[in-house]
Length: 177
Image (tube, rainbow, N blue to C red; front, side, top):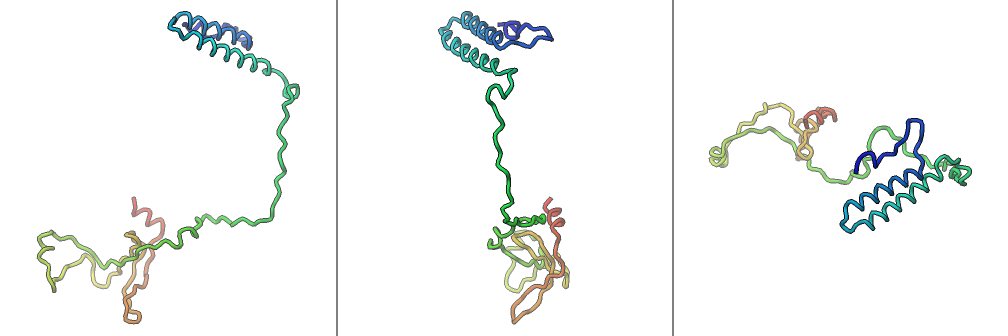
């Protein structure tokens, strides 16, 4: 089948007629079914007939006014203010959903890296040197993410931490990168 069989022969000023398009499609399908004599010609003819019927339907409504076909715009209901106030959106996400999720908070005095050989030699009374100076603020971690710095305090014979510097959200995001 060549490209000439598939495309309608029109001048630039003429628009294709639905009937002529349907006839061309039917003729192209019929010639294709005759060329490939493998017994599938009946299916191709049925397909061509469906195309022809669809093209005729499209041709009948094409160019007609909507009012002549009885097509009218769908009526829309008027929107009314029901008086239910919406929550003001101030850019903050709705946090009520996650308020009861437990998180793990830990304080890190410091850290260091040692070889396994030295780790196996540790016993009671051994001292491990950390990378943090005495008096430096501790790191406050929530689920392993640094959120603040603080200092150790005693409250009713229990240790606590007083936050001295809270990391901003933008800094936390920068540390993740």
